[in-house]
Amino acid sequence: MSNVCSEARGRRRAEISDSDGILERGSQDGAFADLELRDRLDKAIAQLPDQYRFVIAAHYLDGVQYEALAEALDIPVGTVKTHLHRAKRRLRELLNDVPARR
Image (cartoon, rainbow, N blue to C red; front, top):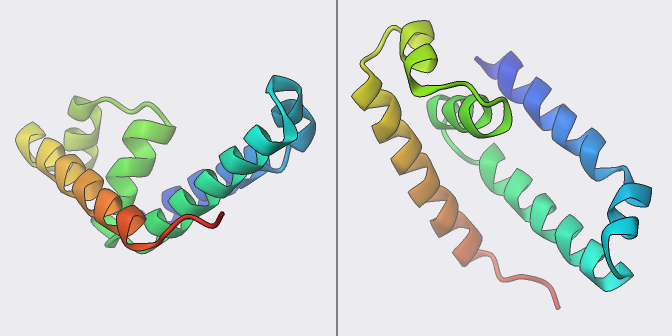
């Protein structure tokens, strides 16, 4: 489980480090704001419990469907949905607790 999360986090960092692609999409200020938000999100995801970090990474970063997650984890689909809901709620709390730099 932790390997999947580490790999997903590594892929995201590789995407983030492509500053040329980001800068082409908008102004430098916008690109910096995107990088800052992604950094805050990465740090918040890292603070989640392993089970929540795994389902967030698998579902939102890798596109794994609820049913596939349920089968892989040997849990009901409803439990997968509950874990995702709780993980998103906790991420919101973590992101609201840490003020954005301005």
